[in-house]
Length: 87
Image (cartoon, rainbow, N blue to C red; front, side, top):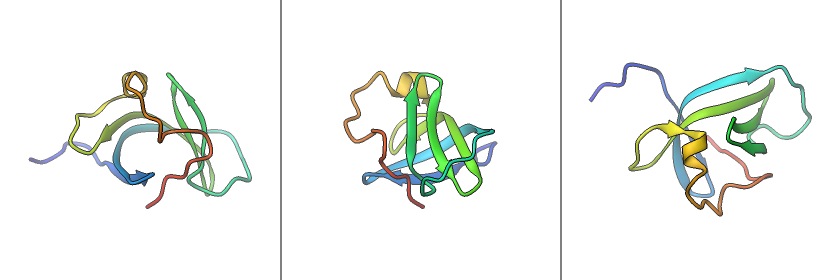
């Protein structure tokens, strides 16, 4: 099936993820790009080469796209501060 929107793909601790919605934050940090720096019901904040991206809607392999708030309701021991998203 065709998706009506562009989607980004990433991996974190061997978990394949699709990012359906995110917003760029006006923050400049020195961490390596891909580092998780904040996790809340508002989103998952990840450093980029040019600032911070707040992930708002995410999809795990085999699942449906859901809000980060709903995504965090399930136990995800692998998702923690300092973990890295990779290409």
